Length: 262
Length: 173
Image (cartoon, rainbow over all chains, first blue to last red; front, side):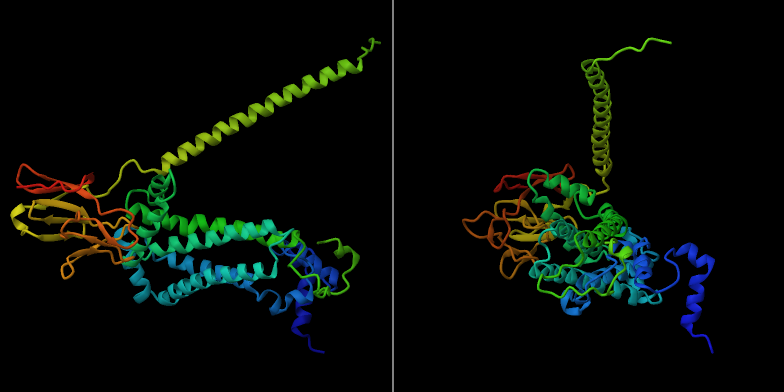
């Protein structure tokens, strides 16, 4: 009998190297699958079991997952864009144009970055509306809602800082207007404005500051809060389900060992 | 065999509290130095992030010879963001930066007003009984400020953008 791909994969899972990396071992019992989630540094943020009902589209419309998807696209397109972009006054606008007209696939990457950014802002709001109208923000999930609000602000700041980088007239005036809004903060408004722009006007310092915020500080802070956000879903008892909703668990009849793993 | 010293519960209590005092002292010392370090870091960060040298254009702009400006003319210098206006009474300068959110306003000769393209604020220039720079309509919270106009030794008009003056102070040449 010819070996199927599944057979080869099972063989691979049995090798010493594979076992040294993935500790849950061979086999596909519910326990093994639960352990595979629980013992993975990335997946352990999530619940090992989920109600079937909550995996259906109608429960969440997958809005949180889609938001995270746009974030991943933004990271994946943003990093290559950095290879051709200099955050300096004489070069920024020319580099943006070069990305459009000279660099291979530059137009595609830039447009994908831009459209994903718009989509992410839209999806964050949609996600928040969905959570709000389902009542999923209520106890014990209030703190995760607060983290969500922080993530909304980070998303908006990412959009705002990215808006300056093409260094065209639209960017310049949008940031001029936006930073003047910051001046309206009582008492310390002008200080905030000065620190934000690194000067009194939108100039070289402002461009560099916005670049560092956009490419380093804000994405790192976003990743940190996204991790806490995901982890809190598990800690707060999994995805929100109304008490009238079916309690069937996606992976049925979990063994006792995995039951304790919440 | 050394004689064992008997400790009464009261003495033990005193010893424990002394022990705790020492611990509390070190906790306070630790927290105190951490707070000082945090405050210092905050102060240093603030100073670090505030640039000490700015490569921004000088606030004083040379607007050229007075005879280049006709009476009742409004001249916008987009680069420096000022209007140099020659009225019947003399020269004066208005900031061209909208007091709403900092957009560059424009002189509309066909309407005889200054208008902001961003959010639609409008300002008087030559209207009778109105101070030039006063708002006609729109979201601008303040009139366009008057800027100091001086005559240099060479006879050039100099506008100091960092100095706002009270309105209706004209420079006569």
